[in-house]
Length: 239
Image (cartoon, rainbow, N blue to C red; front, side, top):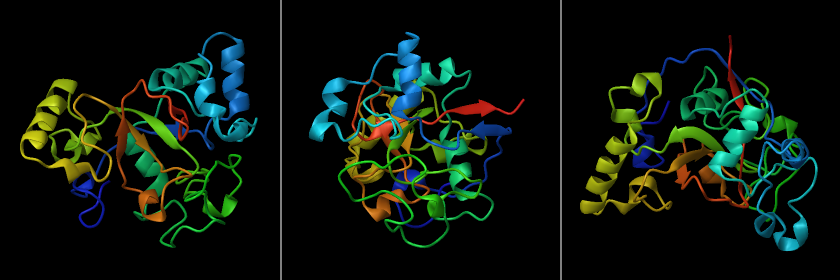
């Protein structure tokens, strides 16, 4: 997990992580699937002011649901008897056994492989040649996906890095305060250094450039954000 070269400082160092067996949904959650949860009153509806932008082109049954918060994503996965994936699990699904740069391998992203550097999402699974090593669709591009973890900029340097676990919120805040005092705003790349505990998101999105789709890229947002480019995919323990 992680990388010793390229990317941002929060992606370093490369290290081995031991994970318990898990399942990860093949696709991102669609509007159609999420709507079933809303109908059952187990989920809050996506933010209509967000998803209806640009003439509502994001609202299609088979397109990934967006405009949902971290809590919304968590509630949906619970509705399905599942949970949110952890960063380490997501990266494992992307990189497989060969530590690949992108889900499909080392080749640079193209419109045939994924959805990036464009103005809207595609239906999930519309780019089968871009599948990951275990057959997952859209692990890079289309929409960002909420992770269970709180974002920890030095997660890979902590004692629990080998288990894929970030620090506690108190430890994360202490680290963030230190990075701010040292003026290290670029530690997490162009994504502004947080001032509070935020949630990790993974996978890149339709509006990102090719470089941002690399398997080790780590991004974060406050959990209450309901964004046009952020959705969800669920995981489950294999037991």
